[in-house]
Image (cartoon, rainbow, N blue to C red; front, side):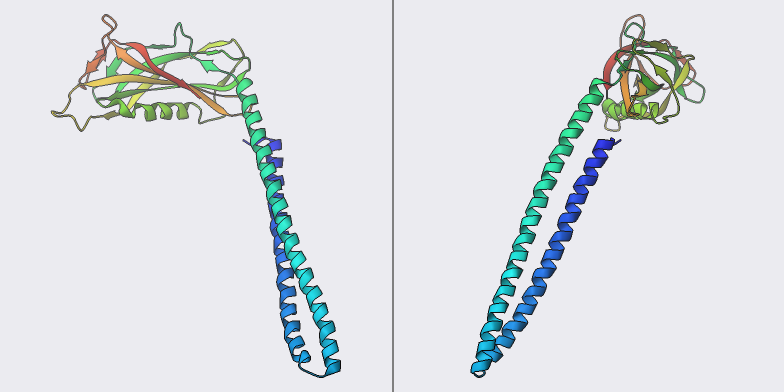
Length: 281
């Protein structure tokens, strides 16, 4: 979202460019019209110079006038070029000022924005993984959030989904999708003041949207890995959305080994989540 200063600078830059174009067009038209008149006068002079003495004197006077007209036309063209160069320099200066202003605004926003992340002691709490009789894979989750910054945050919202796959190379796009959902509605969520901690009021189900198979595996794989993609979405005082995302991998509570499972219905699988990757924007 542009600030008043950014909008003013953009308007000024556009106005300078518009004035430069108008002046260049006007001077160009004047120069073209003067040259047209000069060509007409030059033709008339040639006819007059071939006449008698009186006609020749008039021709000389007209020639002088034509030369002066051409000189004025040339000066008009030079003025147009000079004006155009000044306009270009003004535009470059305005662009540089606008860029510097944007850098300053971005730096100010970064230094005066909230930073929301999970509580390191208890980032997420879930139930077991379940696969129902229809093959739907889900787990219930509750997430925590702490405002580690010095400014309040708006529209705090939580989102999580399961990622069930044999090929985990597409996990990054899915994680970004989870975060886009967490901040898509600016009318939802609660506020958090600096140092405040919040736990989701109720547990919510995280579902596996789809199952991603490794079609290049030979022979075909039977087992899948399960990841939990979580995101805390929020907005700063400038209504700019931010996200803190965490990707957890599923492990066995007793051994810490990665859970590999076949997608058979009617399963309840105890799970512990280990942080695998995190990011913020």
